Image 1 (cartoon, one colour):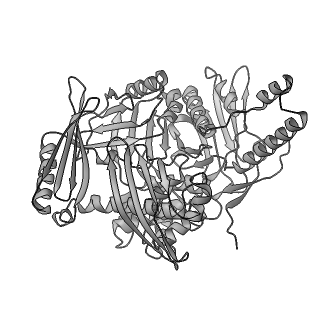
Image 2: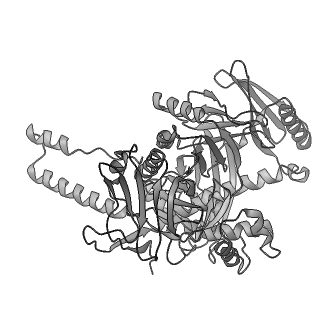
Image 3: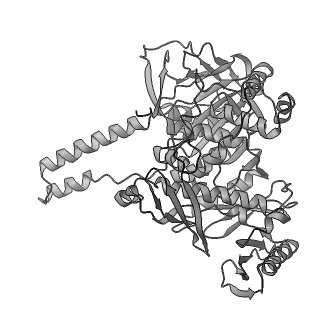
Length: 614
């Protein structure tokens, strides 16, 4: 029996969204879906330019799609026909029909949900998810932006015609502008109900961003001029080689520092000082999508970042006074490989029976709440259990975490809650990978890491052995994770890999090995903080960095422990490195010398850059 891969949704709009402009005033009419009851808001806008730019930027994120598109060769075929080459009319018509059919199927496959509009007692919010499933945005409009505000609370979908973005862009803000968003707008022409088959993969991406937002994060503040400098640098440069990361250097008591790779361009920030307890280096990707924030620069008062960790989303919070835009850039852009490892972290572990419903009921009764009052109302449940229960409600689409205010809000994405088991796995191969790990019931196998080779400047080579009891044999997958977290030089002896290689994505054995590697990394990071955990470390590599305040040059130390050998490599990041290898009589002596060297580097002001790795 095959499992459904799409969630059917029927959308009923009375009319289409529009912008009406007259000689003395303008109206923005936003049509809302009518099957969710009476939901809406109306009022006159006090700052029309802020509303226009914020809404235009949000719609721009919704329409963005940076996936690679193959070149259209129809013009070249026409040229060949004109020259009398081997391109007959029959070939032309056949290829044209094939392209039309392929593009039509692609448009149907890319069907996604309309934006979600939520009217709360204190604000109106709009949530969008980009077409390439790499950027999430939530625009919150405070009540103070409206004059004579009237509202009916609730959540529903918003109609966004293809020409609405251009209409909003031409809105004349020197005239009075009013907003009307509700289900009973006067219909210019009758509209038939629209059935949308939402892919579970899209729901998975949208909801796992919500789940990631609930996790603890490193927070830092930037000034609007820092965002301007970053966007200017991205606009005037084009990286032709990897890595293409945006690196954050966070030192307690000092303003954050941004580093653009591969140029190693350092941007000194002018916002508040980093208030974390420990220094950190965090590498993030998807920086080109920050261009969508350029429209908000004239209104920005401050910029706050929530850095969740390697492979997890990064949230940019743009405070514009009466409006706030929160944009989350996912760490799994067009990469089911990274998504499998990241989403494994986001799934809540053990949730006590009834706790999720209890917390959701409190939010519906009392409105938005921070984490601590919810823990107090949980009736003796631990903080970990409360966080897991809230993560579960986020995955069901019934709770939203407001990153800007640090509050949980009730928000019904669907009329019925999403079954978290449906979006638990991104594909059938990922489900089989978890079965091999023992997470998916009977038929569990055994997955072992046999070798992890850290290659300086290239990435990490990972080898493993997978005992597949259903196939009644063992497989030996291996792959290399480069500096951007991408996979290359992968191999496996299973039929899937022999047939298609990596063209159809990684096989279940490679996915299982990737998950084991991610889990072991997390366990090792927790264990190495304790004296007992350090006794079990026999092989490890750590990088430490320090940047000179005057010259801006960065010194990098790379210290490795391998049994009875301690290897040290140091030098400027852009220069040649020096090397040193020390042999010891026992593992204990080597381990003691290794951690002594790391502690000395920390004492000298060097930052542990382990968190910068993907």
